[in-house]
Image 1: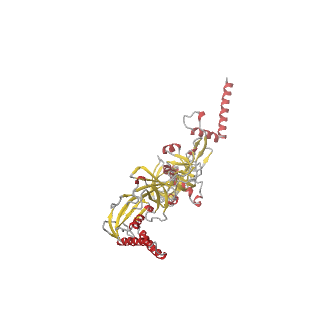
Image 2 (image 1 turned 90 degrees about the horizontal axis):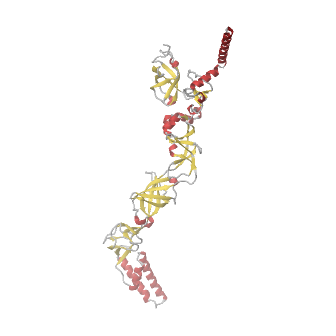
Image 3 (image 1 turned 120 degrees about the vertical axis):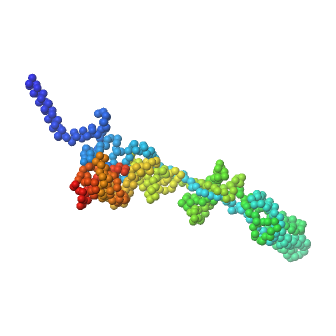
Length: 519
């Protein structure tokens, strides 16, 4: 019995010794396994434990470790499990956002694609008569208005319709000369050739004078037949249209060349659109155009660009563009306001992104490119032509890369995009690439709360962040940093941004000749 008891005790002591030896020989592995198990979420079954990939720096610095360890301030490195790679710190110039926050922000992405940009230029315009269809009625001799047949501006007239009658002593005299010459030609038909030729030249000169004064052929033939002169001459409309100007009054005297009537053919009109100078390079003669008039909201008029004027209005920075279109039913009235759409889409396919993807700060245009789950990279881009909903990308993004098209401004605010854009700085500013972005300042400790691990510090200007002097709260990475310091102590310190708006003091030292040091 005693031998059995001794044997059992010996086996137990041997097992204990072996376990202790194994612990001290492979302590690192044991401790690592224990840390892995402890880091796994509570309540998980042993067969469902997640695999730890590595441990990351607790301050968000780009430093990882395959085994558990502490940073220089005594803080434990944080385990990163399989499937949680998005929780690791982003590389320099990148943004890392949790999947939960992405869902809350409503982030949506679309790939950059090749497409033909559809775009139209909108411009305000006005209806004007076609200048080639406007006629002025101006007698070429002196006289008097004897009678008006059309005496209202705006009255429609037909081609050949009588407008007014005039009396002119010169016209009556010219008619008599022609009548006498025509009768002389008839009387000298049996005379010698020289006499006939002289009379014929006189008749032709009188006839040419009447024709130059716009006397119609019908009136000339009647005069030649009867030899009777007419006291008045009737002026008729040269075209079907509308009276747009009338200066003639019954009984008034007029001089040669004075405009008495103006007639416009409005069956076709112009719309002169004022196009801004940045769009004028895309407008060409012959391009289609659509015109809308407020008076007819259900109608769309179509025409073509007839001419792009070579002048620019310095006051409005616009260039007139003439659109020519038909005017059925004379619906378009001169001086009407018009809205003009000029399609200028290109035929070639170019690389584009939605217009909402571009963040324009005024000095830099950028997009957020999705690199993976929860990981984004801001990139500066060079823009080309703009469409109605997309914009051409000349440089900065490749075809197929996904860009953020919704909530990109929220990501900008949430993840301090300006700090990420530090990657765009000059080469000398990139000398420390790969290292955390730290900031230095000097100040005075106002208060310290050991329960929350925060300290209120009154600090001076911070040049690296363009901060003015102010008082703000900082997290203390390790309470040992404040050992021996009391409120009112002046310090030089370094700090980083661990999260959006969370500033952590990582190192500090009392300033020289600090009266509070060591108390």
